[in-house]
Length: 302
Image 1 (cartoon, rainbow, N blue to C red):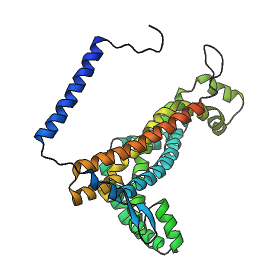
Image 2: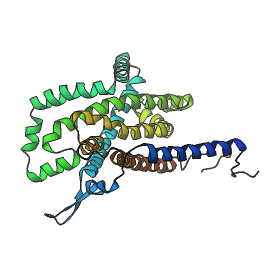
Image 3: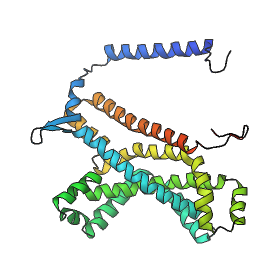
Image 4: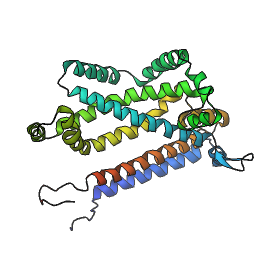
């Protein structure tokens, strides 16, 4: 059979038929055995609402939570990548002290349940430190225009401490995994590249900046993208400290409407749209980064 053609065998047909029968049977049992009446009409009003004061449509609870999840995830992605890269450089450093710091951080965070970290940093940083330094009062003292900018980029003044605590928690948690991804990428660079950089007289910083990290980036891009995308899903855990992201808004809405399945299916779709869009963007970035990669066998550029 020619290259690129798909061949279905008898086993494939049996598996597909089994899946189809299972889906049909599940749908039949749902309709006949579970007393639940679907009402999808309750969802659209909680996505968008008409604001008569401004004369335009505005985001309602679910979309507000959706946008909060985006803001939260973007901040975490940026700072977790910076922290993870710094700790990875510590992990491969010649300094024993730096290696001990990075190793202790990675082992401590990766072996602690994320829910414990959320409560720990919320009550320590948000409830104690940020309150002691007057972070909420400082935000409230800003001009109206500045408060709107802070609310757009972070969170409203009333929820500023909780939002910052959530960012710090996820940055530390995701950064530990990114550390190991970046470290593995650095160590995967061929030894000849290290020796060539040494032969050119590069300092350790120049070697990392101009030779090692650019090559490591190509190798770590897929796992790094996967970790950053999982950040979006991990942000749902912050609903336990009342950060009004998508999962929290779904819990509040479910308690008010009792439309369990409609709400959670809608939330699942919104999460899928967000994560799948990031996957496509990362795929395009990967193709862009590797566009000048030379094929070893043919010796030509892609």
